[in-house]
Length: 113
Length: 108
Image (tube, rainbow over all chains, first blue to last red; front, side, top):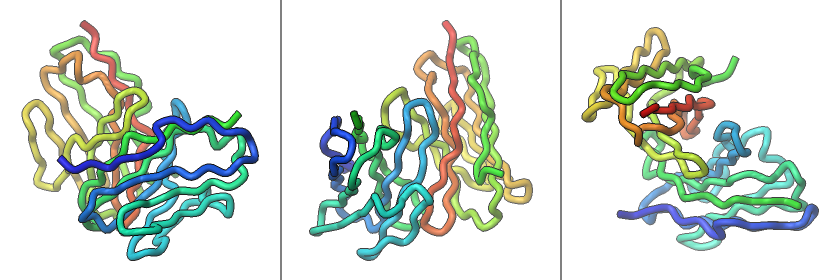
């Protein structure tokens, strides 16, 4: 069964460093998403991406964040100058159309120290 | 007002009981609706899509009332393995919006 894969599963970084979280969406999917979930809290929307551009972003997704689809398969989230409060689980998701179910990767646990 | 609101929980329910989850959404432009399940420290996984006609999958029944902007999930004959957080999810344009989730503990 096709699945969304994310790497790494756990990333520890020092405050102020840049991190890149990687995702490989399901191959025939067209819509891509990043979400984050701080421990014990809700799943929060960060950004949606379609047709090689950001279609929507939340207030959380400020200039510190960027996304890229550098080739036909990868979808990355870059966080510049990480802060302690960026520590969370980051989930990538993809879906084939704008109304169908979204499939989530297993997440990257980011710990900023 | 939050766009998707759910019962705060947690629900502590004996095995075999029936559990009902409620969810309301505020934006009438919302287009499609889902229930996801999330186990501790895992990714959300689709439990079922929700349709106005109602849909059933084994012990699970989901219902949508567009007029009231209300979504429900019923779990019959609950099992220990049903213990998880249940997330109400609403789709608007291409944005997927999650409720905060309701934690369910099934007690042996």
